Length: 146
Image (tube, rainbow, N blue to C red; front, top):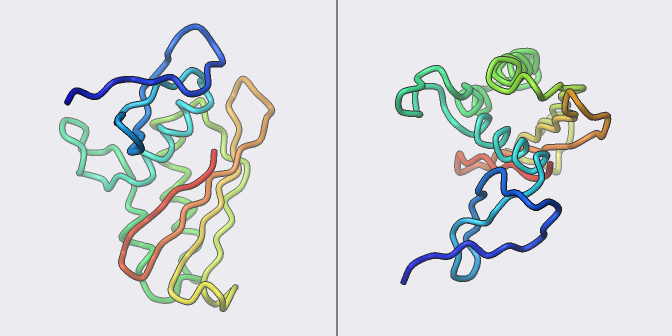
């Protein structure tokens, strides 16, 4: 059975990208708004390890490696650098306003998790956006928001 593109919310007449959707009979969903496209690109960049992408060996971050190091409160500046450097290089249209890092030492309810909140806006907009990256004890990263 072939997959089909099914529009969900149409904000413009032209499709700017395809997003992944694992619900129903579709795997790709059209992206009509450039903000959604940028958010998808940001998630893709931050959740990709350096060296993982074919023909672009410097694309991605070392975020996954550093999140599971001990003493996360001492390496918060490194985490900020691992995020802001690749964003400014690969997505220059994204301007990072703040990167807030919460560890288990900051919030005991997180247990083994780390939570990173990235506040950003596009260079041609003043609308603030929030992307939250969380780690799990199983070694996975999730990105929500945008």
